[in-house]
Image 1: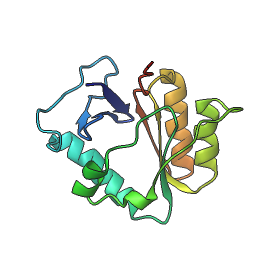
Image 2: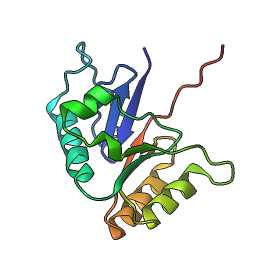
Image 3: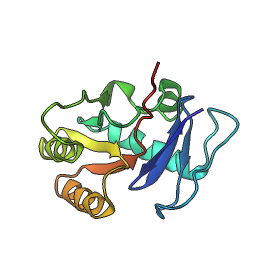
Length: 147
C-alpha cells in the first residue's frame, strides 16, 4: 500500500482514502491508522479546513503530481467534492509555475501541490497564497507504476 504525505500543514493520504497528518517538521514520520476511514484529530482538522474552504465559491485544486483524496474521506467531513479539482499535467509549466498561476487566478480557495518542491519555495508559495486568500498545501507525489 503506498502512502502519500501533505504539508503546509503536512498531511498524508493513502490509496484507500484515509488521511494522516504529519507534524510541521518535514522529517517526521507519517502516522497511519488501520481503519481506512478513521482519522486523527489533526487529520480531522485538515479535512474540516478543506470543508470550510469548499464553502467558498472557489475551487480546491490538486496539481497533477499529487493524489486527490478519496471520495469517502471528503464525504465524511462534508467537503464539497464537486469543488475539488485534479489538474491535468502541464507540458509547458513546472509544478511551481502551475501553483503560482492557480493562486493568481483567484479561482482557488486552496492549492495542493507535491512535497517535491524545495522548502524555501514552499514558504514563498504559502506566503504568495496568503496575498490571494488561498491556502497552499504540499503532498508527497504519486508513485510511478510500471506494468
